[in-house]
Length: 532
Image 1 (cartoon, helix red, strand yellow):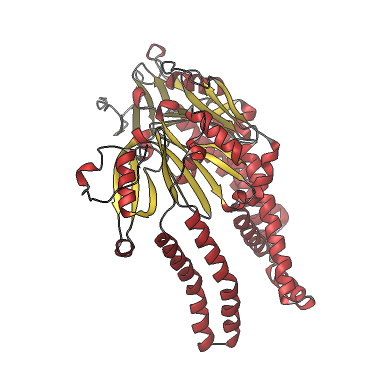
Image 2 (cartoon, rainbow, N blue to C red):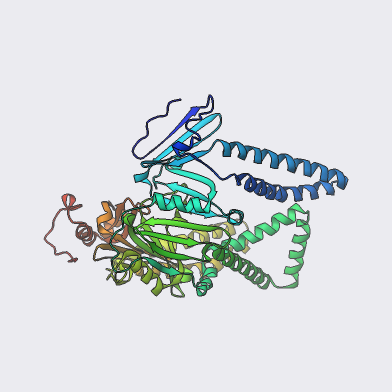
């Protein structure tokens, strides 16, 4: 069987499997390795947990239908055994047919039974080697290794080894990310930040808390439906509201939802960030390790780092806290959640510490996110935000007013209450969003800040900017504003300066990266702001 020639970045091929390829699959002299055999135990235990979660409500439902208990258990246990056997058997085939090796130039993975998949990544293109291990894997001393190039090409840009021993995972991480040692600069190797239990108090202030509170209500309704108790739950709610006022009952229920959400957010934060440690390793690699039940290890090469983001969600910003994310190439993942986890350098912590960590990561005496003098934006930008905010606030009020005129006067009272609550909040958020606008230069970095629900300050290396995108709507043109986006191969791919003054914004772009925008500028006689 012939194998397609690999490209410089990586390659994948799928060919029908006509027979075992012994030479490619296991000759010790060729360096091929297998996954750990204990993957079968992991699969059996995980499948048993899933079967147990589905089998209990099924058994309760069958028993409630009048079927004898012995017959119920026989059917449920037989089905559980069949599902566990099929799942473990399928994983046995995967284990037998999955092999990998790391050569001088390429990392390769072969897997598949009827359809053989061969993937290979050029070692020079590998940007990340991440290790994760849930509770079961940690007990068994195993990890899942994810090797990636950071390219947005789906699964073809990653190799996943699930599972291997922890020692093997660490060996692969060191071998694939080994680089010539760079100059240590102001901060050498060692810990840059470590877990502090005081940070836990910021967890309930995240936007995740109300979402988890609403999810808890949905979970209660779903469980009550499984056990046929939903009607009794609604009867209890009716009695509860009859015993109290509507306003008082609603406030009590909202408080309960808030408490459930806060507890859930607290538990999730502890699971994600317990044992957190950020350190710089030999060869210029930043490594983040964290996790209580599921341990995670994410490595970022400093030569791929293009800057940092200091993110301040509204709740934690009100108590003077912020988190730090990396702006780096090679952090692309198949979904947004994975990319968010990969770029996180510091959880919500005091803002002064966040700026200190950002400075240490960038090897700067002072973080550009704190030291830069940001230029405020014109008042026309404030007017745009006020109009947007009022429009968003008045839209539901207008809908409720129309429905109230057509249907019932009750909706008119709801619309009036909504207007009283929403309009002041919208105005305050709009004014805050305007105050947060700003941009400037700080040494090797351009800095831009925006947002209100999540204020973000980005420090981006000027050398990492590959282009500028200039956008100007009809309304912006009338107000003399424009939006500049610095495009880069790192992070989200572009970072914007929103609603800057037209002439001043173009001058800023030209000063940040001289010569990049100059061919498209028309010089005027007016004096522009000086940057340096």
